[in-house]
Length: 252
Image 1 (cartoon, rainbow, N blue to C red):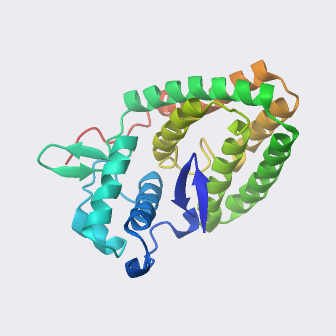
Image 2 (image 1 turned 135 degrees about the horizontal axis):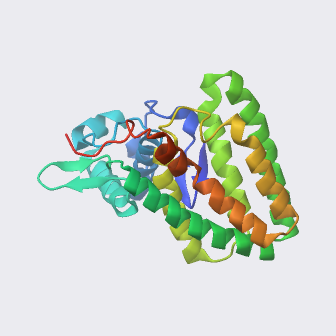
Image 3 (image 1 turned 180 degrees about the vertical axis):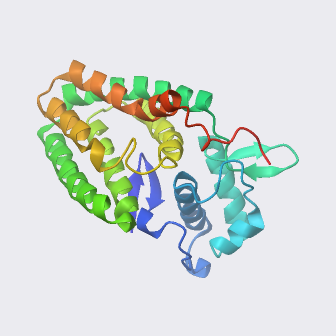
């Protein structure tokens, strides 16, 4: 199964890192590249490799049980998204992490999501309201499970993404949403490396409930300000606590 991550097809996160046979003979080349791209994106966002780690074609070919060509094409696509780095004479790498980069991503994402939220609240339909409520109900259930069962945390991340996607789905500005999608993926690399529950997880459920209530109340200004503040949580935590030891500033 797959879910949509900001316009990108991403394999369902419960299977992160699991080896799954693709049976390439039954798939078109373009479909095969799409599958490898989705699984590689999933693994990068879920911190399967440390920042700066080498992404060798042969190793990835074996991991995803496919040929070198789909792997190279997937790496090139994710390089364009900012989820893969290219180091001269050293090949593809997982991008480095720094507080400066996190602040840049967070501030830009906050500005874009504030605008998208304002538009969604202003122009979202009754169907949008139903989808937001439904997504929050799933998030609430997942949060309860994730609090008691570590194995449920990836499912929580999927529900968390789905709730944010539902909130912004009322925004009918495609270029704005394309930027939001790319920034969310880059931002996810950071907050998923922090200990679970600090800037995400069950302890933040009330903040999500407040976003839901503001959206359904059609308070565009307040909802816009709240989503911007919410997006900045990861960067603010890292900056305030000096917790930069999970960041990597140079390629090995």
